[in-house]
Amino acid sequence: MIRRMILAAALLGAAPTAYAADAAVSISNFTFSPQVLTVPAGTRVVWTNRDDTVHLVAGTPPATLRSPPLDTGDHYGFLFATRGTYRYFCALHPMMTGTIVVK
Amino acid sequence: MRRSEPDGMGRRRALECMAWAGGGALWTVVGGVPRSALLGGGAQAATLADGFSFVQISDSHIGFHNPPNPDTPATLAAAIETVRRTKGNAGLMIHTGDVSHLSADAQFDTAHRIIQDAGLETHFVPGEHDVLIDNGRGFFARFDKAASTGGWYSFDQGGVHFVGLNNVQDLKAGGMGALGNTQLEWLERDLAHRSASQPIVVFAHIPLWVVYEKWGWGTSDGAQALSYLRRFGSVTVLNGHIHQVVQKVEGTIACHTARSTAFPQPAPGSAPAPGPMQVPAARLRSFLGITEVRVVRGQHQLAVTDSTLAA
Image (cartoon, each protein chain N blue to C red):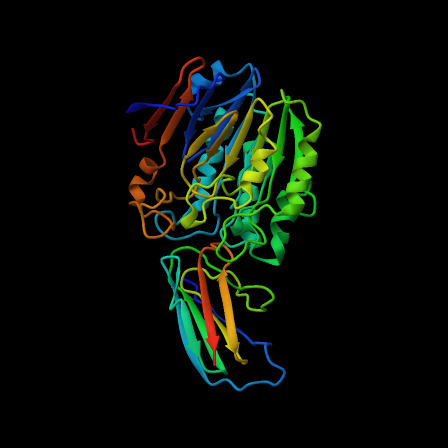
């Protein structure tokens, strides 16, 4: 099984924020878990697809958050640099929704 | 097994449908009434040979590699071989989307190579799995060259007006499939000056009506599209996406979903999630069964017949 780690730099703040820590969101049974994740600014959130079909993490517009297609076992990381509430969903299964709260 | 259920709709027209899960459905228009027949059943080809016919396949998911089907090219090839062998005088084939699993070029190329062996002009609409990269550039470049920039189009063949719709892009969080206003306005214009007696076939990936909202199995603005179709005497809506046969008839509009050539999905609400239904690999074909639905002219009974390929 091919496992990929895909990283994206967040372009959410004017000043670059140093990477601080990782936090995890699991994708399983067509659900983001935890559905609401609260993290400090500078956290890289890593989604891992544990389902046997593909998912794609997409921020609610105008967000820049968008993963590539995540096959089974794939990861995707996104650095949240700026405080705010970021809603996202699965571009294939839009009933799957989640929120990252950055404090 | 055969069971009959009252349909309670008082239809005057006839519709017959037999669909093989692993292969496709052969659709025939006789006297303006689209009917479908099981591919692989030799008898149907003879009885329906007088009309214009076409084939539907769906959800080949090339690139899917998990149980219960680690070899989706093989099952697509088996489906196409069945089409090739039994197509009779079929005039065309439609693929109702999810050609690929991950929108990868290699997956599209594999599908293209297999599907062309059917020897039928094939018209595609995208599934959500086909537009994951670059707004579906790889899909549209190969399969949908005649489409407008939005990926929808129409054409006439065999007296039938075919309309291919795209309800898998620009989906909204929490929502279902969506056509969008631009496409709806195009559809209204496309149908505006057509005779109500011309048979209409609409094909799109996600069901245009709401099969199961909790799993996103429906199109949020599909009812608007169907409202443009009500004045026509014969409308057949063909969809995929849910990997199982579900049918709904409302007035003169008959909606059908096709099974996948790759793997089954659970019945609405019968599992925690709508992912691939796990069945033993050796029994896969017994889950890709045959369904026949027939509305007999002049009667009010909807006959549903299910049997498996393992027999």
